[in-house]
Image 1 (tube, rainbow, N blue to C red):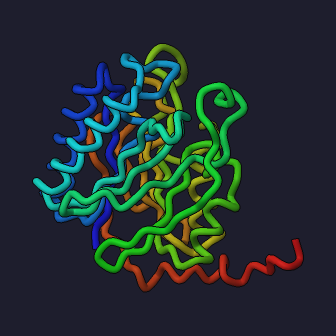
Image 2: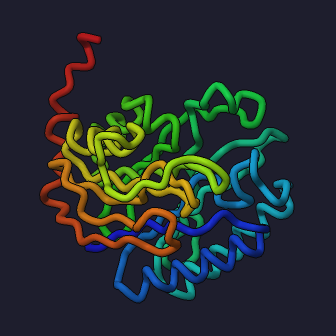
Length: 259
């Protein structure tokens, strides 16, 4: 089975975002991948930099277009986006089946302190299954700094946890060149640990910004980076995964009662 992480540039508009979702989903599907994941709040874009403001109407319309793309290329798409529920704004990652059916979404439950005035934190965790692949989703800050979010998924049978995030900038920063370099920000080290400490695959995905602070990558249960998209380059990284290796062994040995 193959999975993919898609690194698009920052969307200039919702339509521009949909253009890149179509383009990179097609690319991933051409490589026979089962599922492709996009970065955090790719529709309409991370709020501090978004070219368009999310509304219930434009987010619903965008979701419907992503469903068409998924069905067209017969690929499951994880599309992180703003979403309105009961008049409140959530940060979610929607899962769309390869037939274009929305299967539900995972909310961002642990907000960064800077996001308290942007979104309402979610309260539930979910697992999804596509073609025998069981996976969970943890969004940005909570995957980097709250490993419990990944451990929950692994302890409940997830073989992969997808991690849409937003790090870096198009305006300032340091251009990275080597994955996992000791002088780079801690993000890629955290990704490696989420895989190793749970004995599962961890697939982390961000924007292709000029000063990207973490690569979009797929990490094996032993911590080896199987594939990553070069920094600052739009495209997809694809890896073949062996579900027999995603045992969740270390996660399942966790003695929750002692915490």
